[in-house]
Image (cartoon, rainbow, N blue to C red; front, side, top):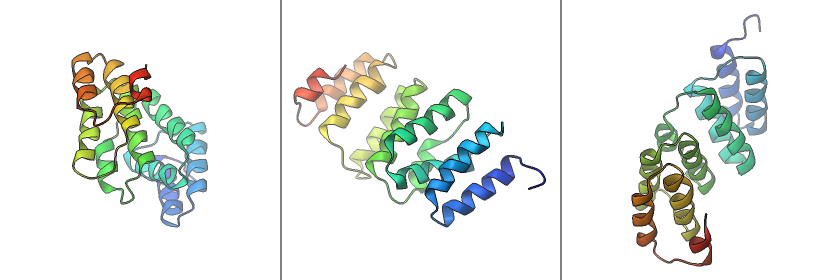
Length: 161
C-alpha cells in the first residue's frame, strides 16, 4: 500500500471481516493503531463485530478500552442495531464501553433494549448494570431502582460492588 491512512486500513479490515477472517480483523486493527492511524466508526463496527464472533471478552474489552482512551466517537447503539448476531458478549462490550466513559444514561438505554427482546438478560447482568454502570457513573438513584426491579436477587447481586 503506497499510502496507509484510515480509509485504506478500514477497507482492508472490512474486507477481512466480510471474508469472516475475524482473527485477522483484530490483528490488523491493532497493527493500524500501532502505526499511528486512528480508526473511524466503520473500522470500529468491523472490529467489534469480529470480537463478538470470536466470543473473546478480554479482547473485546481491550478494543473498547483503546477506543474509550483514544476518544473515538462511536455510536454503539448503531453498532448494536446493525449487528445481526446480538449475543451477550456484544451486549456486554457495548455496555462496558459506555461505563468506561461515565455515560450512565446510554448504558441504561442499552440495557432497556433487553426488555424489547434483543437479548436475554441474566440476574448477573442486572447486578453488573447496577454496580458498574450506574453507581460508578454516580447515578445512585437509578442503581437502587434497577436493583429493586431485578426479577430475582441472589448472592451475586447482593455482593456486587
